[in-house]
Image 1 (cartoon, rainbow, N blue to C red):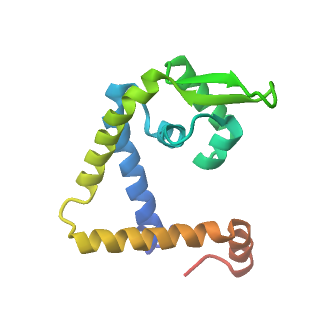
Image 2 (cartoon, one colour):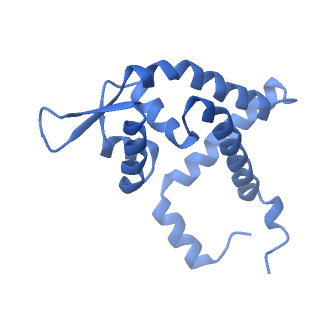
Image 3 (cartoon, rainbow, N blue to C red):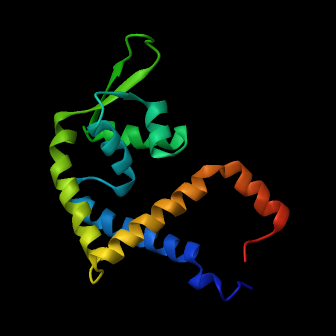
Length: 159
């Protein structure tokens, strides 16, 4: 039986918010032929000329096989191009195509609509506080992920 406190635990609420944001963003991006899962790749490639699959996987914080599938779909849809790296022909460098670049403005608009929807009714001060708290939470979780797992195993579930 699940602990009744779970539904009001901050981690559970953050997870629910994250899933809701993903669903809403997927609905908004679908008419553009995109998914929310592709956003970290588009964002990274919009800031760089070209990146390897390994670099993109690291930036997006997903495993290489998942990145390979994501890139295959984006390649099929004409959003990215692959070129062999000068320093190592076995490495493909990925960059945005004109089609991918052209969608960036629409993507930003769709994502800001979701952001505005999610924060409706929040004051500027509340938004600033929420952003600060979430940054701290992310920093805590990224500090030493392996240590956190071993600490939890040694001490039991958090109270």
